[in-house]
Length: 497
Picture 1 (tube, rainbow, N blue to C red):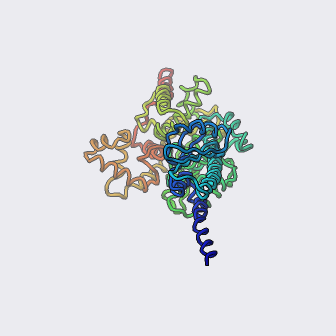
Picture 2 (tube, one colour):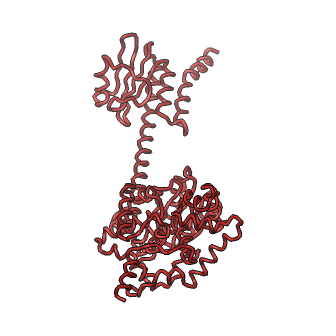
Picture 3 (tube, rainbow, N blue to C red):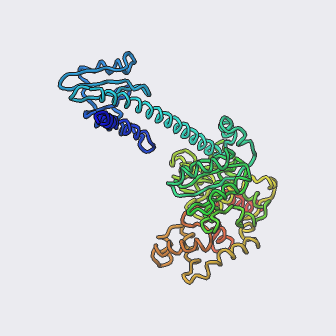
């Protein structure tokens, strides 16, 4: 009987080993928990210091007379030390990963059990610290890679394709060795985005530039030259709720900002699609209904005031204005990696050079059209420019505009009148309400009700809204905006005529 009782007692005395091992299980891997457990196990206090003396976990002690011992242990001159006095007993032990010191204090002397607990706890702490150190290194590597992807995207956004290729070549050889690419935007709930990023990276097998959108918390931007990626992304979203995909038409790398705007526009349409996906080319857009040669000539005339700028300055101004018209200044700044004041300053400069007023939605829509149709390779650079009336009010455009806006006629609330007035008032609900003699909230409700009917986001601004503005211009419901390049030509023709 005595032997059995001894075995039971010994087993109970070693129960601490199981408790300590449990702290190594997934979910229990916390240095703080281990140090707290040690203090309870030895009926004392415990503290873990790093090499600088900073407390990592536990309760710090006044160093007092054993301060020199701490320095010797951190420096590696000794591995451990014991000290007693002032009614307490201390054990100081070096923790090697990373360099640090574990101090354990109790009122009773350290017996064999307490000593073993301290020794084994040090081993567990070293394992945990090494694991955390490795995890931190992996996290830093992932963060650095993520930052690099964003930097490449921002270079593409300002048309600096040479620098973008140079940066990408080190980690993703061949990724940007292409003249053109498509941009996709995948939308999920913000809390699910990190997982979605990893899934996009795995699904595209590093054959795409996958970036967490710096402006929209739930968006993932994918830039890829490979047509097969579209099908991969569609299969990735499957039938998941609240996950949507928008894609651009194929664009040159220098027009990545344009492609991004197209992808965001398509994403708005995806919200109304049963398969939760849409591509920009799937929808009829007004620029496709205009004479290509005339459109190119008109675009060159609109943007001619910018031609005197140095190439880099002009490209930077065009890219910023394109994004600034598509999104808010804050969002555009985040995408480009500059301050919002920089975005606003560039927008104001473009506004001045183009001789127009960006508070006028018709001006914004027309400049947005010019920016997104410039330098198409299929256009003849020597083509005669068309007049705005010819472009916006041709037969195809008028038919498209009628078909689009007539969708609103079935609503008894006269959404069409409200929308036209709201656009004429620069998208300001209060001014539109005064003109209509209704409440501002009524205006907002009418505009919001028009969105699913037109399959376009209006209150958010951007490309969807500008298409609806162009439809109003084509139908004659709104007047053509003032633009320096266009109006100067008209003045010249009158003078020399």
